[in-house]
Image (cartoon, rainbow, N blue to C red):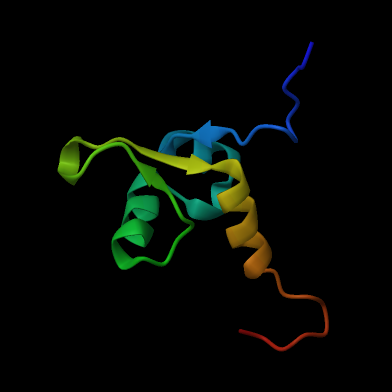
Length: 77
């Protein structure tokens, strides 16, 4: 019998969950602004326009954060 572990599945998070778990994003409004500016993590949208719900893959959030991590002694962005 196969079981799902955290490493085998990629959890989907709502914008509220993202902001609750990753305070760096601030509010859901600031996260929405990042989507609008195409400056945030990749996301899924269930339909076109305002009717579509937005979800983020946890791996996309982690990847986005990793890409912006500056090592000590590294050059500032």
